Length: 439
Image 1: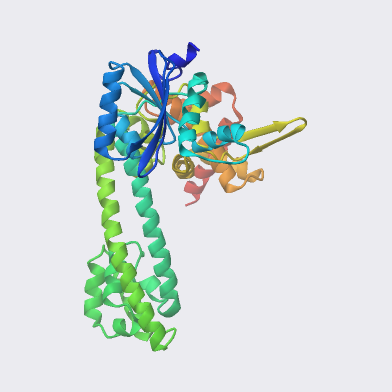
Image 2: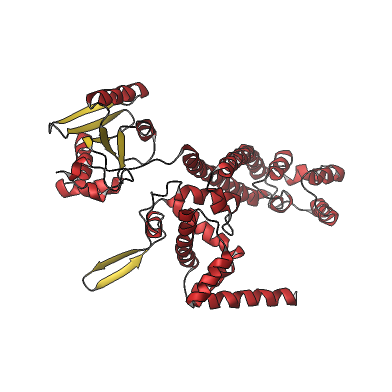
């Protein structure tokens, strides 16, 4: 087939391919299925997983095909193998969703049998015989990819911190619940210091008031009345339990958890500094920092979701589907229903979902739209997804044109179109003005 020799829908200039390769990766060795387009020869072999072996294999491919374009199909959108291949200028990468391969396999092996060499061949055949349905992966620039990976890694650490603080909260409730009020936010250095020094009520009540005053004054500028009230509470507090076993086990666990939380806080701060450095030097940072409610955390994540390559997305609908914000319609005969999209990047969907929630506080039309949906029976998350769906179309236009978001221009556009949202926004703005006057 002539189509199988061309990179279609790839953002590349229809370059001729000389070979198709299916690569089923694993930790120890990779299965390779290679098809030489000129000779029609098929080879199936195994490749040991090591940097030296992979580089030697790539060098052999370059020499064999004189630097001609080789399409490599694999079940991976990131990871060691992809990172090793992406730097080769003659390799055209086609990442395939594992679920797509599983469904394709079932068409030929209904018994459910699975074999790595066969999977490598199926990967190659699935894309080479249907190239118009797949898009080659074109990596973003290093800074944009760094923002993407750093954002996801930061979220992983934040999730670890949340797990630790939840366990710490639960542990304190069993023997020392007053510390939840006196220690401060559990994900702060103040709380770590407080609980490492005084993990029990008995230890805390033996401390001189002057030392506690100095401790609280070292963290911010609390009101004198607040400090004195806490000191009075500590002086007259009674323990929840006097069981020595519960207090001993609880205090040791609290100290252990506080010791885990402290480095997580430092790691998040380090990630924030690096993300901010990369974001501020990125040419698109002004587009995303202009979005209401994006802030220092969400603006870099939104930038990473869109990327820097303007050819990557041809329409807002593509991003809406990729992110999982767009719903899925299932129709068969007279039956038709719509449900939430599950096959998507959970982190990207979370990014748009959180941004939609944050924008409600800073953007009048977003709040008006959200309140309207809630008033008509939509759940919180469904309303936020609908708002995110609308936001993606707006951000896409700004991103495509490299222009900052201007709410005044958007509201004028709504008014000119006679949009119902324009009336809802006016009502929201009037309500806010009335509250300010009353205050």
